[in-house]
Length: 502
Image 1 (cartoon, helix red, strand yellow):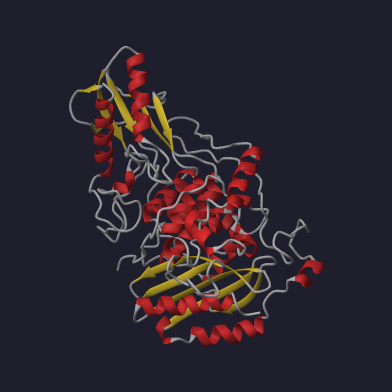
Image 2 (cartoon, one colour):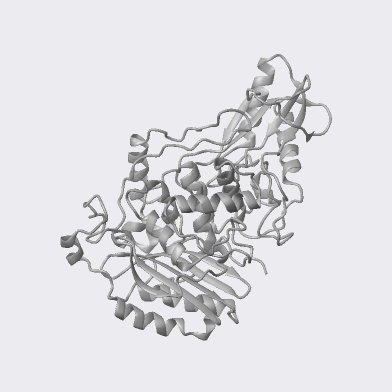
């Protein structure tokens, strides 16, 4: 009953959030060796985008804060888009400034023939390996035109493809440059300090920070020790405050190696080893373990602690002694999608709830995600976002909702959503698609998609470049499949067909 997906690799995650997936045709010039060695975020093109975006940004990587301790995070302004999505003509040739309906460009790169596409997909969807229920949606992102629709309005259990919705809602609520703060404040008692969790899923206690890390307990301890010594003391009592999130810490599925107890104060996702992704047995009390790790770091820096770390409430309005910041939200989204990271997904759902004025629990996150998607003009009829990760079978979305979100993310007028595309695993190269549609597959390098796997449930949603160069958004949801491996192969054939059907 648990998510079978694995995070195959940990790659560096860029701060920038511009589209490179949308210009995948140009990306064909890259050799497979270069892509495998550098990863999708380290290409020269990506670095150029990052530098240019940074020069334009009104916000940079700064913390956009809140109106006071415990207040909801403020949305962050974002830099303008650098690369546009694939338009009706050649990649990046979307100059109409409106709906993308440029007739001259459309003649240069026509969308796939819907009749030919339907004939191909109907045959592949009939594969018994896909189970007894199948639905599909294929959309031309340049125009928003539906090219294929099979029960696309029927809500089904999406498994981890729901992370596309979680990412879209979080980016809409907070912006791609928003950072989550972990702070240390004076306590309510003399000589006490309080470690306050802000919900940073990238927080690490490792002295050698893992790739893609953000908040650092090591740096926070150093700054805290310096502040204490500057105030004339080297002795303190440590409390920890994880009250930002409310409701049950355990996911409704119970104990599961794919997800730690959900806490606003968690280092290294509650992992007891050096892993950075994939399933592993987690700690039962991430907040306490994080506080103990922080206490040890303080002791190494000459601070004497009286007693063991204990839960405490930070006083309202307290000015932080020290602060550490998460990876920008764009990077968190990319990491979540690439590795199908459930811990990040649940954290982003709660951050969306806080930014939307709802409690940071499962029901509050569901309301917030639904509202944020509706604000984008997305039809959420029949949808349920009972969690952010897709581990819950009660989750329901339609294929059309997923392709509508992907189409929004490809819109050059929605640059804040671009990490939804740049974070998708690349077929044959990264994340949960590293070994799928790999090698000689016609979709290798042209397909970027989020996978979804629960027992009997298999899904795939993402983007693919058609032979003409058009960027297509697709979603395939299935249920009651007899064997996951066969279902994945059948889904991969469907996606590959989009890359080859003229």
